[in-house]
Length: 93
View: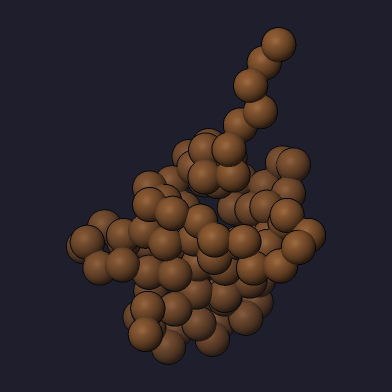
């Protein structure tokens, strides 16, 4: 029997495969405010250090990881079967 993949493994695999969709809010507002690029967000997701569930749906997660420069970023995503939908991103408080 195959072991079910963990959420963090799913996030990493989908990001590494390029299956990342950015919301308009994330692309225009969140990333623009912090001077981030789509590649920064994908790098965080592909190199996720930890994931925290944001609700009881088992779909929405806060993902923590580094951008290429090493600065930690928080990315809020909905994890779908075939892609990650990025809701927003921000530098940690």
